[in-house]
Image (cartoon, rainbow, N blue to C red; front, side, top):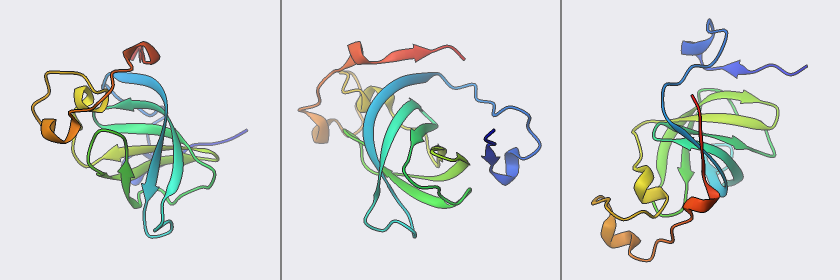
Amino acid sequence: MSTIVRSPDQTDATHFQTSELRYSVMIKGRLINDDFRDGLLLRILNISEGGIMAAIPYGVRVYSEVMIELRNIPPISGRIAWCRKDRIGVAFDEKIDLDLFFGRQGSQKYSAQNSSAITNDYLVRKLDS
């Protein structure tokens, strides 16, 4: 039986709660922190404006500061919210633009940097909250 280790502000919660709309994805990303300065490859399993859940090959320290590199958007700062054996939850310091991440038209932020973004909406499934 595995247990989820939660960040200090979630230790009394019986279930990790989120009200954000999450999308099930299967993409690669990179986690950078003091322990992995060259980056640790992630397999991102779901994403929302406020964070990600990812599969990782090594455990990381809960509540440690991280930088997440994803496609189509600049690196995102955040903290490890929880860690369970081969999975982590990362809470971003600021919300991200999911339209920009998915390469959809209509987002004004960073549009000059993402003129060649490819839309892969058929690979994405919205998760019910």
